[in-house]
Image (cartoon, rainbow, N blue to C red; front, side, top):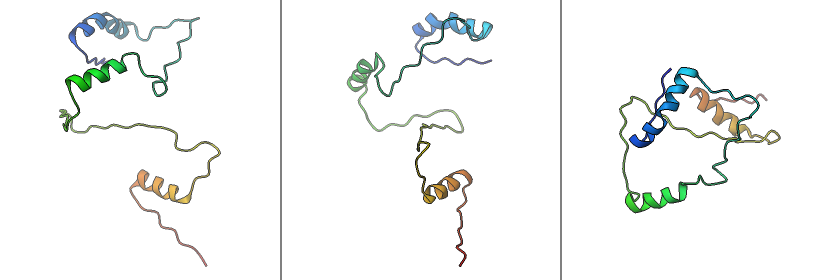
Length: 112
């Protein structure tokens, strides 16, 4: 197994023992204590987000820039529910979905 951690040296030094324990022992199991639910960061800001935004705007204002990575391909995606169970989906959605899945257009012929 490979564990890739990225961060500043003091933080990495402080958590390295946990990473090594994870690689040696696997996922810790704690029966009797269910894991807490993950926070909903869409509804509530993470505790450090306000100060991080302020620091970014102060020390590294937004400007046109690119990030170069040494990979042949880089992907980024965000998922979400487009329709609820009871929603009506139009035929045009089927056409777009088919095209995105296969790269080919659908051809419909009406018989008379």
